Length: 300
Image 1 (cartoon, rainbow, N blue to C red):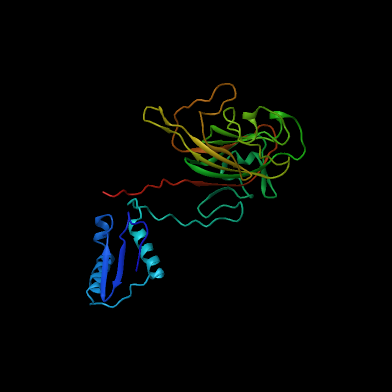
Image 2 (cartoon, rainbow, N blue to C red):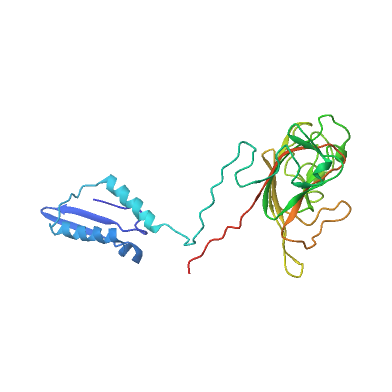
């Protein structure tokens, strides 16, 4: 006897030897897809031949065969969207914290040639020290994944916003705050990891002053229509030292210190800026990946 579970989805068959006679029964299953399945047709044909004595076989249960048939039946009933997706590109991950194979390296510890204003900053021992003014990437980006490592001065000077202040400006206008927020009181939407003056981080994941820290930022750029009206706001996700601190947070507009954030139309691609706010913040290992638009072809 071979029995398949979930009879409301797939066929169930019973066989019995009664004296010198043989009996074969099936409920035929649930839909035309089952009835036209070549394996099911062969199964019914074989059952009829066995019942007529034209084929050899046993009426004893066969758990191994039942399991195989059930697995096949489940596969036949499996939902498939029918959407044709392109095969995802193969990307080789970098060493821990290092750039993957498809990343654009914005700072490799040797040169700030990828940045306008980079000659103002000092580069030594594999890192750059902010001084003299902010710097802006020569290349522009839209939706992206940005990795950046930074460290505030080991010697603590100042308090609040005057302690290790800098910032990552996405599209040169939407700021993720950099600050020494280790045991340093300030307004919560201005501490490290805040969307400045808009949204504080979920938690404070700051390391001690002088220790290297990391941001991994997933940014989705805003969309504007032809008239310059906002169609879709920007969203950002931030991990600070591997800890989620911004979870698909809506950005309410360009960062401003003296007024509420607001959107002004701008191109789909804009540069990244690193702020100089009067404190010698160190930076290293900066790389960025553009997020591809993945679209599948739906069945006609």
